[in-house]
Length: 315
Image (cartoon, rainbow, N blue to C red):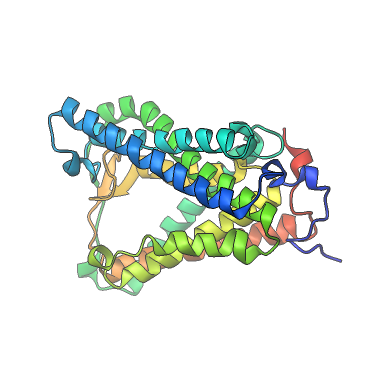
């Protein structure tokens, strides 16, 4: 008989959310979220001011991160999340920063590598699905990738860019799949409260009809879906590693190929695309479909009869 994915079948000490005890009061979590984001915005403001002065430009002009220097400044702002998390868990919850990784107090790098490989596979599958686009869209809507940086220059940027992306994805994962997920799952049993509703709220924050038009709805759906699936993966594996690997693989691919005007400073190739177009609709929906299919395959092959948090398997 299969085990319910949200049953406490393991000892609570082995569950991903166990480090949150005993300071799991909802008021602490709400204040913690406020502190984390207050520190993040303060650090972001400071980094943008310093970065603008060093680059001799206006802080507002760097938001697009359209050059390597601007992209580096943008990614450095995520140090604010790490600092905010450290302050919050130490002072408000009386636990260590590493507890956000899971009960093992360290990243499961085996899970991370598997997540990274799966993310690369998903990206390749999404590219193959994109090849079907001409069957449904008129030739006038097709675009091709153009090289944006000389290869030698780009090669020198790859390692620093990957380090910055790694720092950025861990910042986001530790906030949303670490802190928020641990605190809410320790306080509430319902998947709706600990995983689905926070992911939906995060998705709604990406609603931008001025930029995406009708595609803003699909973008919100995609973002919320990814958040929910990463939350479930984290709860099932008992460690932040798998979700971080998936997130890193997805973002690292953007260093090779990106969309013009959307954090493209590190991208070797750029595709210019109307974000309100049917082509963008196809791109978003195809990516969402491939991700959901990959998750369903993973669940069916390995997770149907497994306990919710295999923390004891962390290496």
